[in-house]
Image 1 (cartoon, helix red, strand yellow):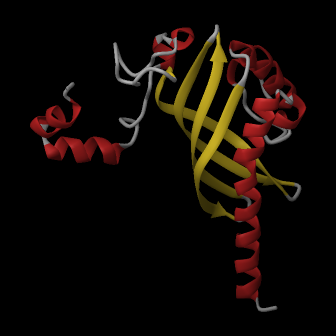
Image 2 (image 1 turned 180 degrees about the vertical axis):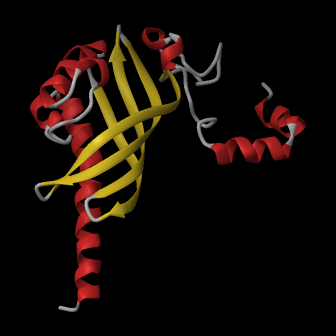
Length: 188
């Protein structure tokens, strides 16, 4: 096999392995399989104030997943950029549904991921969640103040960051002008 062909096959294998991470994450979260969940991350994952490593990550997820009873994370799309032989980054769209306090909340999420191959296995190095909105499934996301309609996550830390997070989005609407923004965001 030529060197060029071998490199192409390795890139394809890397992309296929990385593509499995988000749906495996979704299944692990929804089934509350914390052992499977933390195994998707690099062994020395940085968990911020929780510490480092998979044990720290498990300590983070244990109480976090008690914030809602049932959940369904539906992976809607995945863009992968291989940045080095053992590193990549990706953007994952997800529609997540959560049961909390007798209500059913929907979130439109985008995960910004960093991936790393460790001992031949692709893992998450880091996941950064950003979302467009959360709302009860019977409500429109924009009804009421802001696009954060899930009371449990009403604090400043959980406010939707999308689509403003993208500099291209901000530049597009800045160029379009305030009148264009007002026209497409006005309430009927």
